[in-house]
Image (cartoon, rainbow, N blue to C red; front, side, top):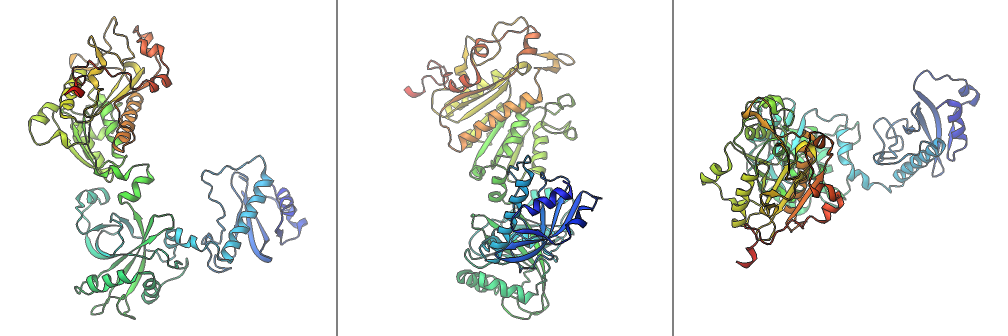
Amino acid sequence: MDITTLINYIKETEKISLIADENLLSQIAMRSPFIFLNCILKVDEKDIPIKLVITSEFPEALPKFLLDKYDTLGFLPHIEPNGSICFLEKESVYINVEEPKAVFQASVELAIKTLSDGLNELNNKDFREEFHVFWERNKYISNLNVISLIDIIDTPKKVQLLKDNRRAILFDLDRNIERQKRIFFKRTPSLTKTGIYVPLLEDCDLTPPKYDQKWSVDEFVNWLKPKISLQNWKILTEEILNKKPERYEYLVLGIPRNTGATILVGVQLKPKKRTNHPLLEEKTGWGLSLLDISRLDMPSILPRGGANVDLQKKKVLLIGCGSVGSHIALMLSKTGLGFLDLVDYDKFKIENIQRFSIGIEHVGKSKVDALKDYLDKNVIGINISANNKNFNDFIKEGNINLSDYDLIVSATGDPTINLSINNKLKKLKVPFIIGWNEPYGIGGHALLSIDDLNGCYRCLFRNRYNVASFASSDQSKPFYKKHLGCGEVYTPYSALDSIRTSELVVRLVNSFLTGKINRPQLISWIGDSKEFLEEGYKLSTRYANQTQDEMNKNRFAFINLECPHCGKINDN
């Protein structure tokens, strides 16, 4: 973008004009990536002085329009602290860079509309929608990083706050937060403070403090009181503030957005001795700081990551935590699942590092302990149990009831073990998913068996051959390889294959637990067979004769009504 072209764009665009001599401007050489021009925007027949800023990256980077001060026209939505007019959220917006003049003209129109809507109070509701943004940009915001784990409800309640010098966690009084301490604090937090959560009215006028406005306690209280319902004010004064002479040093405000979500902001109150709470008495002289609060409670954080809050009450048992199983554990932890029990008797060895889901610092631990340790420190909202034993010993101990699980998943990769588990679970009528890889990345599978319906893992085996397999039953040599000897046998496939199969399994888990599917089915993915064939192996007719779409359509065709495990179910 050169300045002559920009001047022409301005001349050819309605409602914007230059405040300068054109001949002088045309002689300016670009000494930086920026062009700054003083202009006038015509907004509702008013002349508004602005500074136009365009970079050399235009039109990929849109022009900026800045007021002299953010409150030159009053305190309006969508004006940044530096006076910049925020006229477009660029995420997912297509900008036709082949028509830069049209991009410039559209930007001018949008900037003018933003100012017009603000001056005519047509977008005042956006103060509520973006309240957190205004709050966190206040000049006097505290540098304390506050994370909220409290449940959002419609009535006031007491809460607690754990803090050290740089971070604080808000939590409900009945919450066990030992795990959160390990996640958020390197050392034991030094202070425990009390606080109050106060939900605000849904339909109240809600203008935040200006960016450079420092509230006194009385100004804050006068702003707050009209925004609390009479019922909640009664709860505050009769059940919380007057019960004990404690000092509630923190107030957490729940601000309902028009979209249905709730914003949390807070204030830190610095009390004087022998004075009432400032919500009960004027001119207490208490000090006040604004707090920026990030919500990490499950209803807030799970949808942002595509997880499902409804899965918080679901309980899954995962048997086998190797290459496929470890990736399943990580993926399940991100779905919103509430409880995951891990069972595996093996250790995480250094030679497994390329296919395992977590890093080298966990080598030497049992696989289940390594995964639990990682998930406890890195994932919020899931409760992990680690059981370093094989499945049969896990059952024999008698501490669990398989029927208590909403779903059991096996990623052992061992057909004999899977058949044994399948037989037990069909008798107990417990839903079951098995996931496994094919050698050399030719594919992977996930099979869902449901309660007392026909269709299970045993249905796949005809004359001891798994009919779902992409490898022919007639092979000249086994698929496994030996790393060091008989004790180090492995089947060749990559971490990418394990991730793909794990995704197949976890999507099936999610669909079943959320009620989207209710029939037993076999889901497969087809990989590249080049290396498999080069090694001298043979493909099955299922691999050779069906496309991915055909396999998806035929996902119910595996059911064997003569199956020894499920074929007679509906006759009993």
